[in-house]
Image 1 (spheres, rainbow, N blue to C red):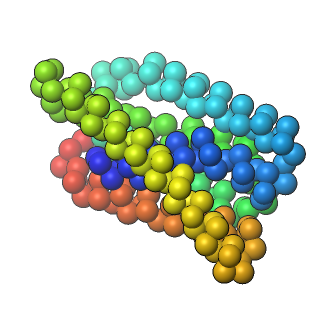
Image 2 (cartoon, one colour):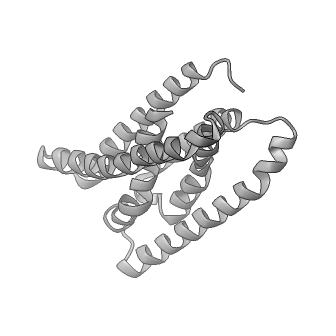
Length: 189
């Protein structure tokens, strides 16, 4: 689950904390106030999504639906939404980013899945290590997305194309880490 933590989870936080705002300003053409309002609703959506997952996960677990299975089937939905953001470009605003964050929250189920795979005495250490990967990934993805936006912009690409290429690289990395996750968990449901 390390690639999911570093690339996917870290990347989701990178988009939510750093890159959704500049996209809305530079690509969608939002005013600073509209972008701030959009970020507010993106974060409200994130909080509501965490609350809903916390509420329904025990009920789904009672039916024998594991966290791994939910991640396997839920995470690709977020990839599709992120693809729509890239594809729609100037028409992709706060609503699509909110939907992306909402559909991405399924990745938070990796944390209880990790804790359950270790003895009680090691669960805290495993979660601490996992959180290091998440936060390192957030920094790296924030930096990497910006690096590619600047690189392609300096090579003569317009700002929309630079964002699209950078976001596409991030999406490809997410899909590759997901494929690796599926491979490692092909017998776990």
